[in-house]
Length: 335
Ligand SMILES: [Ca+2]
Image 1 (tube, rainbow, N blue to C red):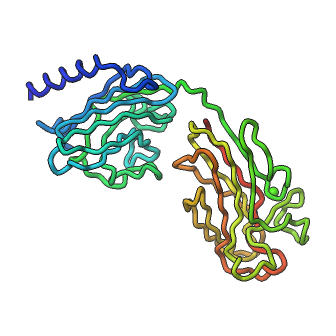
Image 2 (cartoon, rainbow, N blue to C red; image 1 turned 90 degrees about the vertical axis):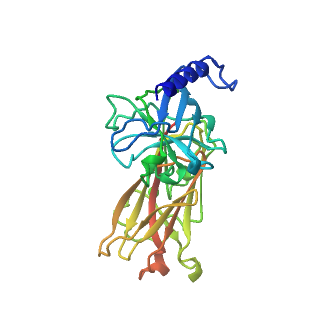
């Protein structure tokens, strides 16, 4: 064990002396040791796998370089994710930083960057100490829902100490609210961006067909399913597209305002074709506008297409008014 540690220390010194690999990569000024731990004692596993990570402690993005060694035979060919793991279990909001595969010699090597804000985050139970960085098997983490989905600690490499990263990027809060039925808002150009478009909605209401539409007397809306468009269109969806979301985008939140009317106004919400909600309200007599809010765990960049699809049974007034009215759609994020 002693010889082993001497070797590890020698390799740390050697790696520290190496120049950064990529011309775009800033100076990797800090380092972290990761190793297999006995999950009963949290002591290092003798002769276990270990990795050395160099990283930027303050930069516009989190740049890093990972070199791992001595992975056991059974884990050769396994893909590992480098993650920031905030406690408690299952690490809700964890961040997948990059990934690499263990080669036939039992080594693992990759370098990349991740567009992240400061770590640890304030809600992390380890906030006072710092951020835990782990190497976990790809199968045990969901990078979209951002949480651990299995626990096989004998296969992981854990942090030897906590780290901190400070983002020097100038984070700016963004808000795009698309007022459905307001034809100026529906085509708005967001300053510095390509703008907004909508498609596949019914006519502007209540302007077109009259009626109460909840208490929207001062506003306008549209339905996802317009009357008179044929039975095959009952599951028709309305789309809102927001383009020009930058590559630094983080912390997205989608809010939609939907009329829970006299029918069963069930619906599904998709973001870039990924289903994020299936909503089935209790049936009632009134008409109530409801806000539904969704954190976007994996914030898309470029164009974001929001699809709102009625899935409930046709209500009695469908041939007059259509189905599932939407007042507005709002996206917030930072970039
Ligand atoms: Ca509206």
